[in-house]
Length: 317
Image (cartoon, rainbow, N blue to C red; front, side):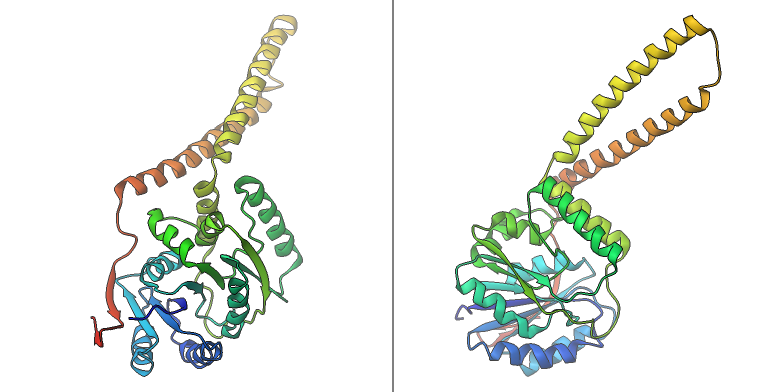
């Protein structure tokens, strides 16, 4: 089968209400680019009719459509990794199924990739956020860049472009819990970012809970830097020095002023603070050890239950 110039990967999880609108806009937008392409939908264990709608779309456009049905819900980035392993294109673009990123913006990413950029990140333009969320996002971006040296202005925007070389390296990476945009940026030789339009979700609610967002933050930091461990070691050194100085001070006061209880609550506060630091340190160490455990265990990233695709004019199921 001829290698397409472009592979578009769309993870799908309970998007029944908006899939038809996605089909109606995605295919005309790609046809207008006048290049060879394939669209890979990865159904991430949806519990609604998403799988049935994807099957119908495959029947309607089996010349350019491929469908992967995962055995259960693995998460968005695991679904993307399944799409990466199946993709045949020289350029790979990821896209959300909720139409927050208009499919018509794909042409902007292709233009930058044809200009020589092997990784194209995107920034959502005219995005309406409250002041505190905007400032919090800026602070987190600054902190993340200082820790990992990875510059991602808008890490929540799914519309991104990757060269074949980057995708091959991601596929060979082998780790399960990875932050794909950051990994792609790390492997890139000539990355760039562009602004793209941003719309409201066509239907439904965001699939990311607060836990998922915290999980992504941990994956980003612990997957690309040991700086938190170094900071923790330095903090432990400072606390140890401070505790030793406090001990000497209390012993001196005991011999000079005699027994006293005025500072007992201060000691309690210091003790609780140190316990909190220890618990945080154990959690951080556990995060790194857990990543090592998952890597050594070497379980598959996901299990593809069914594939719908043309292979020598046959459909594999």
